[in-house]
Image (cartoon, rainbow over all chains, first blue to last red; front, side, top):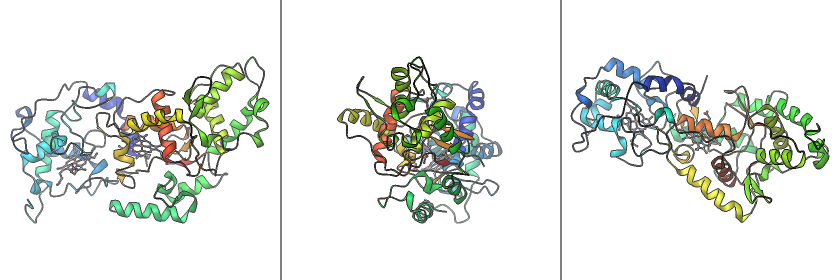
Length: 155
Length: 256
């Protein structure tokens, strides 16, 4: 068993290479508490989104969150479960929560996945780059929208 | 398990092992480990860190540099050497007025008193000597000096501890104060008390310093890690030591 910190460290070079093609974040068009339009007009793919969410070098979501991922051992305990996220939130709300959770709560520990400003001492390979590019955010959103909860919307 | 559940389990484990509990909520990283790793730390014949201690003990009496002197020439035989000293670092070096870590002090001794070149930070010899000197304070309370010259160093360390940094935008406090006892994926988050350094880390399959640990935490949040020996790491060490005042030194600890 290896701890995630090592995964993150060991994958630095790989991640850096993967990011080399992607550039600066696209602008986020916030309306109310959401982003109604897909980032850069891209369409998301839920299967790719799921793969990103469970990937501990790309999405990193399960470092903090649990969720309906029975095959994933070692889910984090720092954040609410992702189960039912697509029932609790609209697609626009989910997009803002993933792309820029700081816009909702500046004190949150959840990273703003599609923002590269307002950060201190970022390691060189990641400087100026978002954690997920616009396509990856749309894939994640498309997947989160499929996480429906039988009890229906709570808010 | 819920976060509170994890913390309760960690607390129970700590109470069962007496040494780790302070009664004021502070817990050594020891308390967050599984029973197998705890057993490995407690048994000197199973604790791989003791190999570094033994190597350090041999180096202690080995002459070095143009002076032809060994550490023992000034500080006495290994069996009597420097009890409680590691528990007081970082400390101020009177000659320069600057804060130095234990590793920094070892290198100052080599240069000034042995006329020998400094040892590579994180090299085998440095880790062995610091493991040996640390082991000579095992079981003693961490006892940072009441030197007013250390106050600004600790303040700088605390500011770094609270700075959100890296692409993932985490401060040390976000994990170690706000979420200690929780799990970051597989890893239980300890309270960041520097009780056992240098440690034998199973993940490294080697002994490593506190600075290596801090650099790992920084790399984990995709922040630029400070270089070994950088004043920022000395400042963080000084702040961490002040938070851990009175906690028992476990060197060489074992960590997952």
